[in-house]
Length: 159
Image (cartoon, helix red, strand yellow):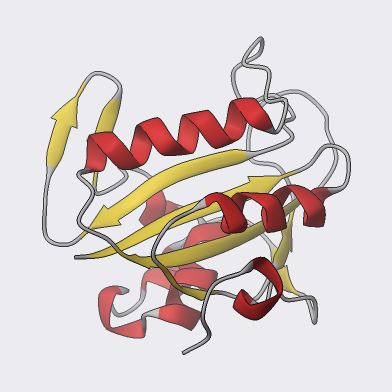
């Protein structure tokens, strides 16, 4: 099943945190270019590096969330402050055409179409899943970087 996860980091070696996260994910098909973005909400903090990862996985949304949270913990993620800075943030964006509405997991991600740092990299990987006009309607400033996380570099396979 086709699934998409959003990755972000704004503490420490941001690129290394994202690279380690991608290496820890099973069934990676593609990784978007990296984007540098200003934080949305929360206290004053540094800029994020963001990317979207496409998986071809038979894992459920709940299993993907558990894996994401495990990778965040391994990266030293501290959840002391809502919207605070973080070493690693992984959001479950889409999992096939499944929908989930639970207190700790909503799929499709409820705010992804409002967030340019999700819409832009998702559009790079899968323009077919991004609604027409979503990029223009999304909020925030993003800057596409020449940095990439090659799947060969992290142990996956390139398309």
